[in-house]
Amino acid sequence: MAHAFLKPEVVTSTALGILEQELVMANLVWANPGFDFAGAKDDTVTVRLPGKTTANEYEWRNDRSADIVLSDIVEDSVSVTLNKDIYSAVALTDEELSLDISDFGAQVLRPQVKAVATAIDTGVKNLITGASYATTVTVNEDQFFRGVVAMRTALNKENVPQEGRVLLVGAEVEAAFLNSQMIRDVSQSGSDSALRSATLGRVAGFDVVVSNLLGPTEMYAFVPSAFILATRAPAVPSGATFASSQSFEGLSMRWIRDYDPMKLRDRSVVSIFAGFNVMRDTPAAGGSKKLVRAVKGTFVPTPDETPEG
Image 1 (cartoon, helix red, strand yellow):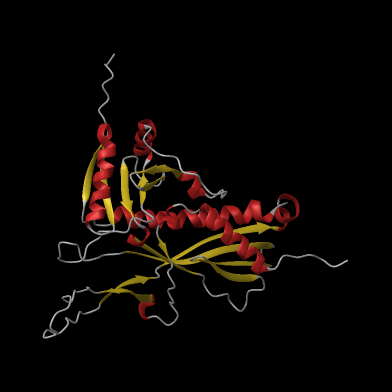
Image 2 (cartoon, rainbow, N blue to C red; image 1 turned 90 degrees about the horizontal axis):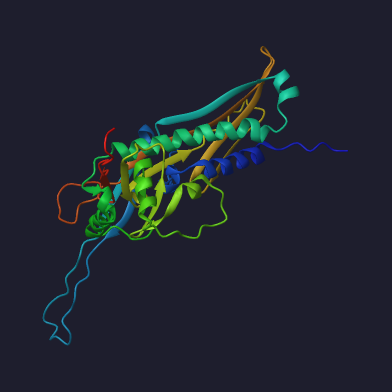
């Protein structure tokens, strides 16, 4: 009877699926849009964005004495640098592998991938919370729907696309939304991903998503293209006997498993390269480039009027 061993490619593909399920913030941003870092100077690539131009109108049935107006096509670009080497490495002794580990995927691989997912989400969180926003809106708890509409209006004024808008909130803002009973629940897919579990519903054209990585009163409205996440799987070393790299829907990961004979233990290493950046555009009113595809909300809780004593 032939043995049935899993190939490393299968295990890595499974790990990649686990990673996608565990990510919340990273699934809300523009993830790895076809970046090729091979040979890139300083590990940085510049991505060309679609050009913009203007349309003109030629007078109907004119005498053709005037020439048409030629318009310029203006392209823009954004750069992103791979500068994070995120990994999880664990050692498994002979005793643990023989007596304690009955399901490698559940007991070893999933905790490792979850740790990597948390690190990636934290990187996206730091990108969002540390960005400089062109617009900040005050959102009072007792009038928060009006505040959310003001955030929507700010995006509309900058011609930000309607599709894919997200309102990312902390715990206290989440409570205000849930208590308001103004959120419209949306039917979800059959996915059991962490993002689905974190999605509260819709309000004012936003998918409302909660994250405990944010401060309790933090809130941000944006579209995915406001923030950029690039990932790449490290190369598989030629000396690794059991290893693979895989990519799927903007995510890349490498998994290596080898044996340390000097200490009689296995080593499992999950790793990923990552880079982050903010998308800046010229505001509708003109001037220097700013972050206009996202709006920061300043949440003001309603004072507690409970009498003392």
